[in-house]
Image 1 (cartoon, one colour):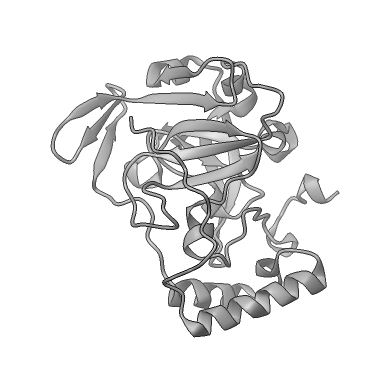
Image 2 (image 1 turned 45 degrees about the horizontal axis):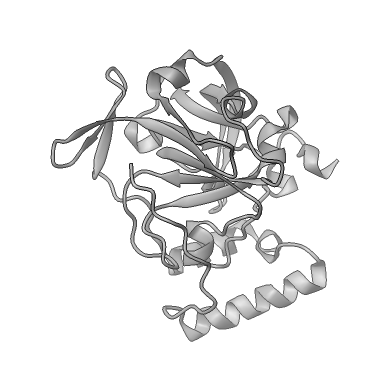
Length: 256
């Protein structure tokens, strides 16, 4: 699997239009005034309109598909490659886990809500997979690690120097049982469909859905949060993206 380094976040936005710059300036002012993410201050309809006006693309499909019976990634040119999930970065020794290895870990099933940044939600989605405390127990993480950066299979259009989709989440959130985060392998009792993120995806129900990265093949442990693909493509999307309180059926434990 490719191990492309993550470039630093860009300090300029060469493809940004003036109207968008003005809008982002308003967001920045709101954030300073409110002491929070300005994205959360916008009505859902306004966020959806902004996302539509400045669209971005993520992983290009059908560049690959996943064969769960054989645990293999099948590329568009017909090549087959055994899937492996790599755990590296701030660790004593990198670890690679095959698809059968992931299936051999304790499996849990959770019914969770899914909230898109565009304002729509899917309630009671039945996920299955591995808790991060079980997954991360397979590697010796160094004490200075505070975040996990997830890397996707497949290429993307350029976003701030990235060639593939990435997202980061705080280790503390991933390990907190109250937040119910999961490395999902199943949906509705069957292996994840390709379009839903096979072979493995993050499900973080108290964060906006763009943080629940699909097609995960690598977890890199870092000391700092890393701006993800959407944040680099459209900086209106914040690095930390909790779901708005009024959209949640269960209160976010981080706010209690």
